[in-house]
Length: 177
Image (cartoon, rainbow, N blue to C red):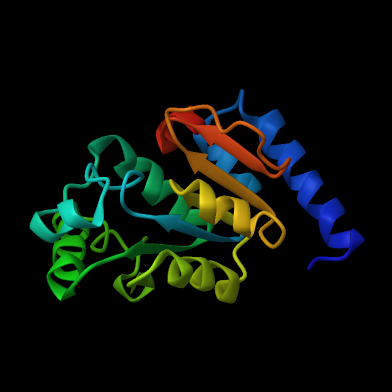
């Protein structure tokens, strides 16, 4: 559990991000400069929202392409997902490759991580010691709220009683717009 100094740093980061919401994407990403970002794929980067859909295909949302590349220019970014089988992993990697996310030099294939449970995804984020995490699971962001400085909960529903270090947005691009 972070100490008082770490909590004050988190509050400071949250305030800076909140002030930056009226700025351009590059200004907001610059606030995260030299920080580690972890991001779920389903429902954030991909059109698909469930592991079952990922078994069949994966489609990168065109509206997040430039944003992901901008984040990768300034941050150490890890993409991650809970999958049911090897075919799902292949579909995810092929979709990211087809979208050109690996060719541009921003995202690294080695930093796309897969696990079989949400507990595994939570463990990835904690072990990587992310400064900023993006996820569609309320359970995961709630569990990580004590450990991760700043999080973005992607959901069309209001997040209800979220911790002070958790932002809520219907999509990644809407948060940064």
